[in-house]
Length: 124
Image 1 (cartoon, rainbow, N blue to C red):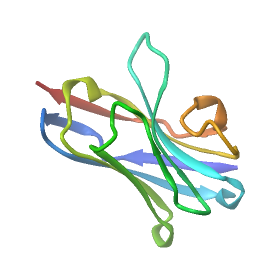
Image 2 (tube, rainbow, N blue to C red):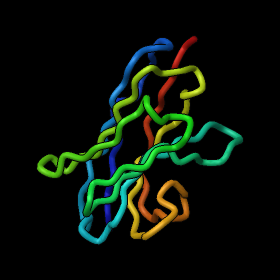
Image 3 (cartoon, rainbow, N blue to C red):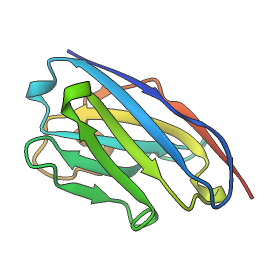
Image 4 (cartoon, one colour):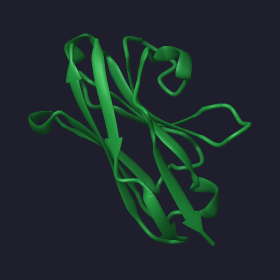
């Protein structure tokens, strides 16, 4: 079992920055990947960024490449998502996830543990 708790969401103006955090605990050693997803009502959950736990290799969705950075602090058992140059379209509920998969790292089906989410609102 893996427990994930997100924080850091809030309201920001377009062009601003936010850093999301995901504190994880439990049997995280069994997870091969961790990721950030976002969702707005009525739409499918979208993969934003993912990171492989062994190598630290990051993956990014096309809409956030060059603006968002995913990284982990193993000493603090925390996953981060640094979000820069935020746009109105980045507004969503953001979820942290952990999974055991060897491909499709930006697909929700690759993850079996999810946090409760943190809300990001970007005003234009």
